[in-house]
Amino acid sequence: MSDAMKAYIQEAERDLLHTYNRYQIVLDRGEGVYLYDTDGKKYLDFCAGIAVFALGYGNREYNDALKNQIDRLIHTSNYYYNVPAVGAARKLKKASGMDRVFFTNSGAEAVEGALKAARKHAFLKDGRTDHEIVAMNHSFHGRTFGALSVTGNPKYREPFEPMIGNIKFAEYNDPESVESCLTERTCAVILETVQGEGGLNVADEGFLKEVKMMCSERGILLILDEIQCGMGRTGYMYAWQKYDVKPDIMCTAKALGCGVPVGAFLMTEEVAQSSLSAGDHGTTYGGNPLACAAIEKVLDLFEKDHIIDNVRKTGPYLERRLEELKDRYDCIVERRGTGLMQGLVFDRPVRGIIDSALERGLILINAGERIIRFVPPLVITEENVDEMISILDTCIGR
Ligand SMILES: *Cc1c(COP(=O)(O)O)cnc(C)c1O
Image (cartoon, rainbow, N blue to C red; front, top):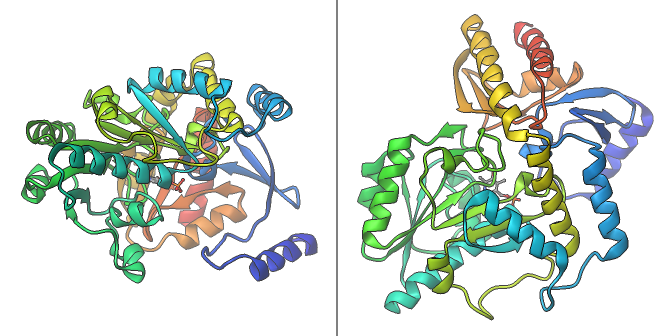
C-alpha cells in the first residue's frame, strides 16, 4: 500500500466514528464492473456498494442525466411539485404494480414510513393505539428505531432498548409461527421476500401465499421489504412478482437510485385512501429533483439495456458455478439465494477469505460471520463470474 493510501486511512480512522471495521482500501473510481483504489489497483466488484450499483460504474447515460439535472435544479422541498418526481413516480408505479409512492432518502426511512402507514391504517379502522406488528427472525430492515425494532437480530437491537413496542417475531418460512403471533391487534406483518443480511434466505412460495391469505382474511397489512432483493436482482423487477403475492405496502431502495441515496415506500390505493394524510409524514430531501432524475434514468436503463434478461441469464450461471465450488470444498456447507443474490455458507468465519480475495483484486462481502454474499452489479457477464470463481477458488484453497 502506498503512503498516500495509508494516510487517507489513518485520517479517516481519526475523524470518522468507529461504526465499521472497514477493509483497508480507499476506492477512487469505477468502470463497468471494476473498481480502482487510489493506488490504481483494479478490483472485480461483487459487492456493488451492497447491492446498489446495478448498472455498473461510469454508465454514460446515467451520469449525463445526473449532470443535466444538477445544472437545472437539485432541490426544491416537498412544498412544491417538480418534474423528475412526476416521471419517477409514474415509472416506479409501472415497474412495481403498486398505486402510490412516497420517496425517502434511504431504505430505513422507507421502512419507517411503511410502519407508520400501517399503524395509521389500523388506527383509522378501530381507533386503538396498541397495535402490534409481526416481523421475522433473522430479518434486517435498517438502523433507525422503527426499522431496528422489526429487525430480527437481538445483537443489533439490545444496546438500544427499549425499541418501539408491540413487535412480535415469527420464524421465516413457517406459516404456523406467523399465525401464532397474530392477534386482533395485529396491524401488519413485515418481511423480506428474500432475506439479505440475515443469510440469503428465499421465501417459499407457499409461505408467502399463506401469510398473504392470513393477512387478507383478518384485515392485516402485508409489508414486503424489497430493499435488497428488489430492482431486478432475483430476475424479477420485484421478487414478489414471481409468486404474484402482492403486498399492501412495499419498500424499495438500494439499486433504486444506483448510488444516489434514495428509497421509497409504495402502497395500494386502498391503503393510500386510509392511512397517511397531509401532515402525517414528511421529509426535506425525499423525492428531490436530483434523486428523482436518478430513479427515472435507472428505470429507463433497466428497460433499454434489458437488465432483467441479463440477471435471468447470469444468475443461474453464478448459481451453478457456486454449486460446483461447494461440491469441491468440505468447508462450504450450503449455497443459498436466487438470481444475482447468492450466498455460500461456510463452516467457519469468512473474513480471512474475503481479505485474501481483496488482495487478489476481488471485492466480496459477508452476510453474518460465516456467509459470503454475492450481490454484483446486474450487468455482470458469465466471463466476470468465471473470473470471480477462479480468484475465490485460490483464496479458499490456500
Ligand atoms: C439495506 C437494507 C435496509 C436499510 O437500508 P438503508 O438504506 O441502509 O437504510 C433495509 N432493509 C433491507 C432488506 C436492506 O437490505
